[in-house]
Image (cartoon, rainbow, N blue to C red; front, side, top):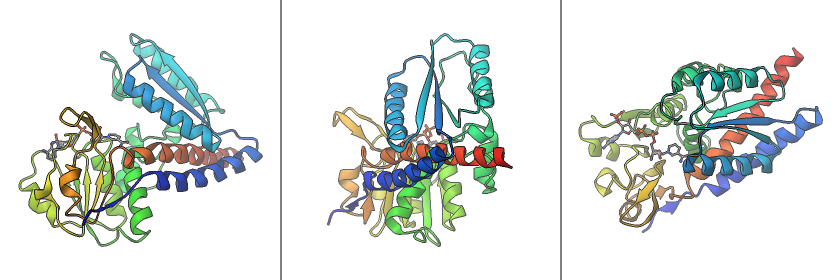
Length: 292
Ligand code: NAP
């Protein structure tokens, strides 16, 4: 039997409804939720993500302003731009497209973003809040949050609690925060990486597997077991298949597990919906702070 395909579109639509309602309420109070996208250069990946984010945000009632700089922009110029966006009361969320061109100090520039406008966990403060579950300023990385939204939607609000979960990949933007968010929802989490011994045994013992190792179609049937829910975050080009694929060998694994996300059309479709929700929530928080 083939696994249930956990598509991202219905999850994104449900999040979109929630975001649209928040934006309508904000607009009634005179606030137009607005995202500033800051980009250096013209990387095709950045432009594609920007188009998707803009479309999703505008559909929910969020305005998007793009500040596009040449690839050879200076550190000081970008820093000045971010600082003035921090001070601009008409801007509620700031997204700095990464990776930045060589020669720029990415960490220093991410650190220029005001935590309360940090809608994609760019700052250390926001990541600290995610790791401690303190609910502090900023938001979880959109992709890591999208993993949780997928699981909530398809397994139910309590579907994570008590489960064993393996997260394959420990990057700051995906694996690590996804593991933290899962354990805050009472999963028992094993965070795996390139040095993990007997990855197959770890994964087979879990009922939820989140694949985020960035190695296209590298995770085969030996890692999986019946009954599992697999969230494939990976997205890369398969030379063999001449199409975009995830980190999991879906064709071989879908005959084993209960449910798996498709690539494309899975987690990626939810990421921009989470971004839009974060902008609306940032605008709500900023309005509340201004009214205090
Ligand atoms: P990354 O920074 O390259 O991190 C990869 C992680 O996987 C590292 O922690 C690495 O371990 C681990 N790893 C590599 N090979 C492994 C192996 N054989 N076994 C176990 N772990 C292994 O990648 P990333 O930025 O987290 O992205 C992960 C994937 O998600 C990529 O395919 C990316 O394109 C995709 N992505 C998707 C979205 C979306 O919206 N859908 C957004 C962002 C990223 P070490 O730490 O030991 O090196």
